[in-house]
Length: 480
Image 1 (cartoon, rainbow, N blue to C red):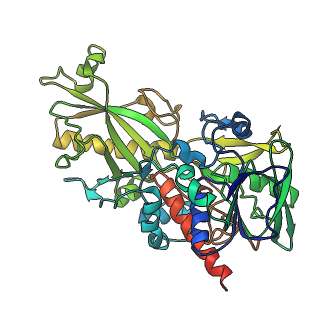
Image 2 (image 1 turned 60 degrees about the vertical axis):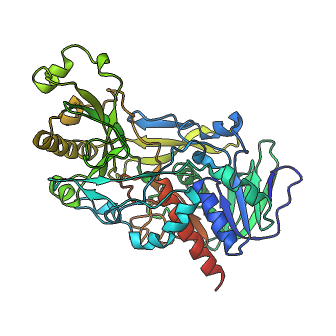
Image 3 (image 1 turned 120 degrees about the vertical axis):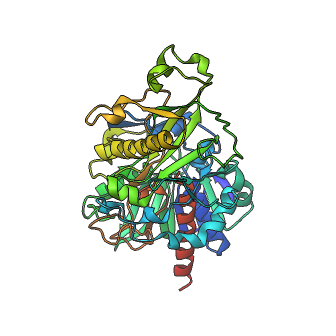
């Protein structure tokens, strides 16, 4: 059933699982647990639609590089940020789980084979078809063609609203803002939730899951650690650390002096598709010290808007044939860096809880991951086509400020990853391979905050896979 938290709300005496957060992770996990017969309390801090009062809880500070406003970079109502999700889907690659050469912290304690059993179930949830196979790029050992598929996109709140409303085994409570936790002998005994009128309830469960997103999972766990002597996965001070985005920017332009069809169905030429995505090969990444990334070509507005003389300067001559211009855009895996982190602010929200402060900078590794695959593409175009490429100056110049020029997407993908990273021990992470918080018996994290590294794939599909895997684990554990 689904209801708002009021002074009349009476939760049941105990639930099998309490999930805090009703976005892609929380909703996927809840429906998985219900399919296994477990009772679920699903708490959502917001309502069924956007509310200014709820959204204001997400206000926070950013220190370091320019970044999106934290209040508008995520949504705080039933369905979470899937309410404005673009729908791009692709599972993480096998190499994304490995320690990349020179970057040991990119390794996961699990492999892609641990998520593969949940691929088809995740596909049904986000309503996508089979993923096409990636393919080599002809005459190139450096680049490969990769593919995404697109969800309608599914709005999780809308999709599961009726199902959850009619299911008496799941108690969906809106305006349930998590506050403090009662912890005894390494176990979360209960969590207190409060609405905007200061009515509160206490929920008891056998297991508790933080599924609040890649910023809020960190903020709430830091808040609880402050109250409980850093015993909740923070024995080494790693909660909130190694936070990541997908640096995403326009890095240059490509001019084609032969037909550029931008036809979705034209796959004969890997340079003539509306949505063309290229990525470096594993050997290229090793040889050039880069992480994973995707490069995308996007058609620009009509060439008549191009400044006089610009095209001739780019080509080194006046074009002899009609020209076609495309933006060169890149979205890259970010190096896990200790100094990129979520911290508690001195500023307090309306409940008296500390807000989040994001400390985030891009590094020269991030610039290198933009630059080297793009240079390889430029060489490929020069060798195999009449196209020419120009990279923006900041891409080529180390130690210069990252720019947002050229109509680019600056500075990221709204993809909040890391901070409660998955690891084999508390020396290098916050949760174990089953997403259980180190130092606890029954507290787990769901969502992209557990990512030790992010590859270049949009995270939603992998979030769903991980949530289904966690649901399977919790159901099996409850059956023992």
